[in-house]
Length: 289
Length: 289
Image 1 (spheres, rainbow over the protein chains, first blue to last red):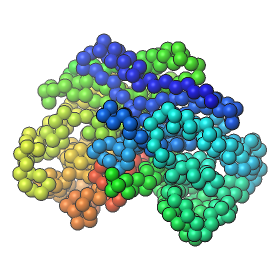
Image 2 (cartoon, rainbow over the protein chains, first blue to last red):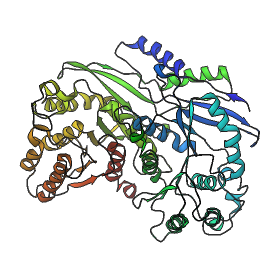
Image 3 (tube, helix red, strand yellow):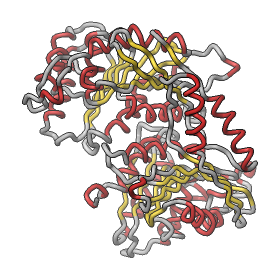
Image 4 (cartoon, helix red, strand yellow):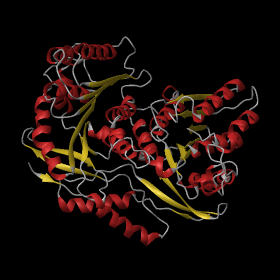
């Protein structure tokens, strides 16, 4: 795996100091959280991939400090929001969660990577070959995360053992698929409005088949939906069914929360759902400090 | 008023292009929303002030487009969050609100600027001269916003007529004080956990005295509290009283919403409350497009 990385924080800082000192002593740059883009050549996917990484400011007095990591799908849509939440909620005057590394994974072929089966059926069950050709690559994509992306992140950043996987829509589908097929990959799973309609509700069936009654599953799982066609929509019915399936399994150690946001759309829901998910995952963090 | 401003978007872009082309064709910078810091000399306050400005990317095909403006207090705490919300919620695939300029006002002397009266009493009604000496400058601070800051923003940015004022804690107190004393300054007011305990609940009394039964007040008002000592806390009781006072006035055209967040602290509440406030303010925006 080829790794090209560059921390441009100091370069940017240097540049801004020079540029603004030239203008005025009163001028400062407004600096948003420093983040970087890393390119990877994935052998598994046989393509160049990018990831966005936001990391906490490291206190020089505690250079060995390690941080939890959030991996978020649809990186172009959600990385900046999660970086902002992490920065805000981990501030010393807020202290609702630890400082955390955020890794955003932008898409190349979204449908290929984020769907668990090869299917050409749309949400109404009708064939749509133009939209869904090449679907079903999620297992390979999860292997990319496990065997190429994660080792690279762990090698280059101050990662601790605690890892979170978060996604929305097809991304939410991937998160649930990962929980069912690679439960050891992450400690907490956040599935916002997963597209459970995929392939005749394949993952709903898999959830029921995979999770054994009374089994131990020491994980955190947050899942949600918005107003995606009202209370009678297939989206909401599917989420209610997922919630009922999970409840009846009575899994040991499984800490789960389903939230429904009737006033949010499919696209506004992630803003509040990611926040609620972080609050849920780290609800006992303050006590344990 | 002296104005020093510099849009460093193109400078930064140029720099990054040069820096990263030198490293690799595969490398890109992760760019957060471009924002700038502007220094102002305020004659009224007799001091240098800063403001943070985040502005939408202007479509060259519609160079005359004008944007609403959000002014947010405690700029160091809340500007970046609001800039992120505005960018996310105004995206073409989300469209929950219009593209909006965000102006963050960081503090110099917070207690002086954000309290409506000179008082040395803490939230328990006990004297605390070391914390509250010099309080009571909010009227002068609002005049600074009206006569120095706003004209400068309107002169230098593509502002439309719609203006929002948002604040938290003492900032929320300032927002309510502005609504009562300068209601024409803004179109929408967001008061998150206002410190209504200030000076023996001065603003609760002022609210009751100032708002006349059945009067016209064509404004939007969002106010909220978190879990700040439980349901019997003075914070929650004060917010309930504010809500009851507003309800009994039966103001014409006044569009208000009170939200209570029992699972949020004083410091985590703004994350979800600012989001809910934007959703409330722009609830009819999509229909009116």
